[in-house]
Each structure stands twice: as C-alpha cells, then as structure tokens.
Amino acid sequence: MSVLGLDEASIVPALQRVRGAAADDADALRECVARVAWHVIAEPGDGVAGALIGALGPVAPLTALLAGRDARSITAEVAAAVGAVEDSPGERIAAAIERWRPRLLSRDVIHAIELAARVQAALVLPSDATWPTRMDDLGEHAPFLLWWRGPLEPSVGTERAIAIVGSRAATGYGRDVAAELSGGLVERGVAIVSGAAYGIDAMAHRAALAGEGGTVAYLAGGVDRFYPSGNDDLLATIVGRGAVVSEVPCGTAPTSWRFLSRNRLIAAGSAATIVVEAGRRSGSNNTAAHAGELGRPVGAVPGPVTSPASAGCHRLMREFDAVCITSAADAAELIDGPAEDEPGRSGPRDESEVRVLDALSTRSGRDVLDLARRSGLATADVLGALGTLELEGAVRQGVSGWLAVPRRG
Picture (tube, rainbow, N blue to C red):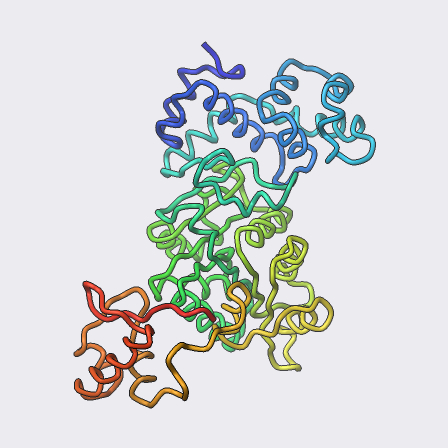
C-alpha cells in the first residue's frame, strides 16, 4: 500500500512519532503526508501553493502534480476556486510548477518526517484543535504546517502573546529595556514571542524564562538546527520550558529570504509587536510591517535621538503610528487596553503595600518570611499590607504561598 506514492511501511512509523494517534486515520494520514510534501516542495509563504491548498485542500493539487498534469489542466479544473491567485492564474501556476517539480522527491518527504521524529518535534496542522488560529490571518501566505518542540501548547503560545524584537547589535540600553518589558509582561500572564537572534531577541527570551513565563522562538531554519549556534543553550532551555517553532523541514538551513519570511510568523503568532531597538534597515522593521498589515498593534521604544540603533524605532513612531512604549504597562495596553481604576481604592498605595507588591510574583507563591526578606519590611508590616491588598483583590493566597493577581495594563 502507498500513501500519495510513498511507501506506507516507510512513512507511517515516523508519522506516528510526530503525530501520535492522529496518524492512524487514513484520510488524516493522506492530508498529513500531503502537507509535509508541500512544505518540502514550496518555499515558506508561497501564495500560489497556499491558494491551491486553501481552495482544494492539500491532497488534490499534489495528486495532480504527482500525475504529471500540466498547468493548463490544473488551472481549468480549479480556476473558479483559486481567485486568490490574482491575474493570469495559468501563468502563475505554470511558473510555480516549474519551481516545485525539481523538489518533488519522496525521499525528501520521508527524511523530513524522520528528522523531526528524532528530535521529538510535534507536527501541528491547521485541522488540529491546538492549531494557533492567529496564523490563519496570513491567508494564502499562512504556513502549511508547523514543527513544534516544547511543552507550551501551540494555541496557548499565541493566544495572549506579544512579540519583542530588535537589533542583533543591541546596546546596553536596548538589552535592559527588553529585559524589563519581557519580565513585566510575563508577570501579567503574557507569553513572549521572538526569533532567538542575538541581542534584543535573546534578552527577551531570557527575561521571560527568568520570570517563569511562556516564550516561543520562531526559527528561519529547521527546529533540529539551532541558529545562531551561540544561542544553543538558550534554545535548548526554551525547548524544555516553552516552544521552538518552524515551518520549514528539519535539516533546512536559514537563509536571508527565510528570515524575512519567518518574520511574518512572529507577527502573526502574537497579539502585538514591539520593536525595542532597530536601525533604519533592520529586519525588525519588517516584522513590524507584517504586524501592521495584519491589523495588529505595533509599539516602538524610543531611544537617544543620536543613536543609530534607535533610528528605526523613531521612524516607526513618526511615519507608521507605532505606539510609544516606555514600560511593561504601556506594552500590556496594546492588547488589554488602558488600565482600569482599581475597585475600592481612592488614593495611592502606601510604601509598605508597594514594597510587598514588588516582592510578589504572579507565578511563584512566596511566604511571609520570604516577602519580608525581599521587601525589607518587618513580618507584621508584610501581613498588614497583604491584608489590605487581599481585600482589593490585588493578591491571593495559594497553596505554595502568596501570589500577585495579574492586572490589566
């Protein structure tokens, strides 16, 4: 028996490792193999392939290719359904077939699945309940599938998430701001999305991990091939506690084009995008542009007017209406809206309440003695502050200790 021309004995065992029980259903198996084949033969964001798959599903157009049918016959069959392939669909499909056919090798499809199985990557498809539906906003340029490594569930990793991106050659100022924003956002229950590059990206991921928050790294190459190599340890940690994601086959090397294409996933997989530092020609501006095209909020951090590292951010604010971001509260407002007044409070907090709140975490419970050490207050003062804060709903007592309640904004 074969599945789309592939030997079932060769492909099903590896598929079961990346899909689990989902690989047992015959129709699901054909769709899965077809999507893997498409992501082998077409480059990320290929709009012609995306339009064909969107109109017909992945199996029918792939079957036509495997049968050696020409563009005219394929176009005649699907012309009414592929309106997304704009003008001259026959010419566009013919050109696409010319670039697809040299890659249509069954061994490459099997190899992609086997490599993913070796690193325990999960294959996530648009038909899955856990599929991050924000990706669908990319339309015909949406990924055919995602390779996902890590415990963070795909839908959770994008549902309440903000992308923090910026220059690889980050300044000390940029790294400090990225860490402050990332740490403050995870305290508010927001996941951090970025691209695992040196500089701002890496700092955003590290601060999210330090704050025990969720973080997702989108790669331009395969999830089995960490890049840059200097961030191997960081990416390994993200695999253990967050998620490392790619739309290209395992073994694929990152290229300049794939980095630009990857940026659309960072933008689509987030509710908002913040650029911390960027030169005028930075790739981070490309990510911000994708976010803007998707109708997602874009923020930019101001820097010294004399710093070339902030020129891109200033341009985003001046010419593209990016929101000026100076704190985690500003960043959270991009997805939550302006902070609401706290019920039951008519004036500012006293010093002991502020210090206790600063000592609390939204994720790790802390006892009174720990809070006293962190805040520098006597235990009696800590208890008094906790009582007031609990009445306001600003803190709660969990099994492991006291926790701050995440606030909007």
